[in-house]
Each structure stands twice: as structure tokens, then as C-alpha cells.
Amino acid sequence: LQCVVRSPTEGAPVALVGAGVGVEDDDAAIRVPVGNEHFIRRLPYGHARGLAERRRVVAALALADLAVIGAVSDVVPLLGENRILARHGLRILQEAARPGLRALMNVAGVKPEQGIPPVDIAFRLGPRINASGRMGSASLALELLTTEDSNRALELAQQLEKINRERAEVQDQIWDEVRMMVDEGIAEGRFTHGIVVADPDWHEGVVGIVASRVVETRMRARMTRTSPAPLA
Image (tube, rainbow, N blue to C red):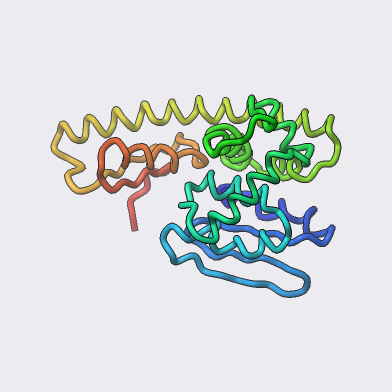
């Protein structure tokens, strides 16, 4: 899951207890410490980037329930090995053994005893976990996924619920502004081949979501920036 690459030290508590830690960005490298070795992989493979590369490490650490959340949230095609991972991950996820995930499901209205379809991951669990990193620090999401305290897990899940609502409000506000700028630009004959819009007040954690929506609605290449500085 993306943490907007703003929380490079959040994995320290996990690393201290001997677990593997993966820090990744869709277009960057993935570095996964395992024991005393470091594996660095580039992500050059279209839909196979992201989860498909870190899948082997995650599966080896028996974290398939977390891996399937990443796969569905990243809209990775569930084909081949990804499909196998998703199948086992959904089964484990339905058991809701992790206090954090169990609390998050409760807050998000997900009922594991009735089965967890991918749509619940994509639109209920994933966004709430991602909201922590998008709006500030991924530390809340990290603690949620690692805590063994059910009471603390519920507190964290409720905090993530609040943060996710704030994320949605900020996202909708930016989208309204972007849509107006794009409509005006098209009416004036600009944005013929692509769309570039910017505003220093836009939150850097959600502009990517808004940019994707521009592509979906306008079918043009886009660049949505938080800074109006000239392009290099």
C-alpha cells in the first residue's frame, strides 16, 4: 500500500522485531531487508509492478492477508501467481485474526463472517489504510496492522476512519477546482494533447487520485501538480 513515500522510518519498529520490511513506490525501487541481506528490485513491468515484485517476499513471510489488500487496492490483475496469492489471502483475511484488521472491518462495515469480496477491500479497507500515509504519516496504519491490543486497535481504526473522511473531503474539493480549470482551459482551446494544472494549496497526498480521475473523464494525458513552478 502506498504511503506517499513520506514515512521512511515507519518500518523501524517492525524491523526491530526481526520481520521483513518493504518500502515501495510504484515507479521506484523496492528494497526489502530479509535477515542481513537486502534485495533491491526495479518495477518496470506494467501491471506487474508493485505487488507482483514484492509478492515473493510477502508470501514468504506468511502475510498473504496483507498482500491481498495491497493487490486489490493497487488494482493489480489477479492472474497467474497473483490469483493464487489473492485466493489464499482472502481466506486468511476472512478469519480476521489480526486485531487491527478486525477493528478496521468493524469500523468500515465489513462482515468477514459473510465473506469478503474484493470490492470491500478496494472501497472500504484499502482507502482507510492508505489515508494515513496520504494525509500525513503512515504510522497509524502501521501500528494498526501490528498491534495485538484489541482496544488499541479499535482506537486506531476509528482514527483512520476520521482521517479517511478528511481525505475524501480534501479530494473532492481539489477535484472541483481541477475540473473547473480543465473545463475553462478546454473552452479556451488549451489542453489539446494533454492537461497540466497546478496549485500550491493542493494536498500532495491526494493529487494523484485527482489526476487519475482527470484521465478517466477527459481521456487525455495529465499532470496535476501542487506547485505552479515552471517545468524543467
